[in-house]
Image (cartoon, rainbow, N blue to C red; front, side, top):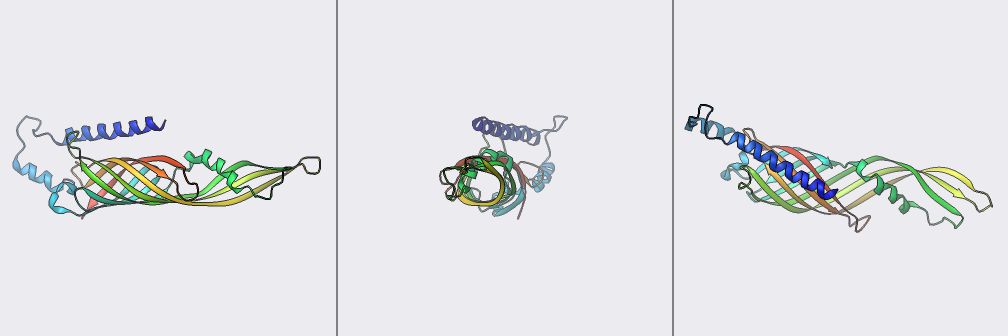
Length: 239
């Protein structure tokens, strides 16, 4: 399933970029007459500024939808180098099985051989993240005008609060005694993240559309745990 999602993401951005590029790069008007130099200058004056080589650095503010949902800031230092900072909320529903299995981490060592502890349900009351990434980007205009590919590395911090309802069974007296209980746990962790994405910005307004896939590797609370993440988003680009 993860592989299919990645292919779908890549196909979407290529289709998106090709469609808009074809619509906005036509050199002829509807009556097949060449566009005048005046029209070209007018369009260039409002074209997304990240295509002006003389204008770097630029900045971008926007949002990303997916896992996770985030507010995103990008600093375009040069044509090829950029820094991105994302902060927001993870898609908690995608981690239900993981959080269910994580209950084993909170079973007390004081349990005897005649006692058992089972999770009944859990509720996520907070699941937020923060990450910073250094990106290297290059033109993919052979595929579509205005399209860029980027890759990079960064670091992600995650903080989740979970409420577990559980059942404690004790048969030390010869008969099973069941007790309902509840515990609140905080999961704070961190680890490196790798990213691969596409960014398209050949619009008549300073807007950049992007789509990316990330790979998170937990080195804090659950060393070795890893997961693919991804999303689509928009940024407003300015000086």
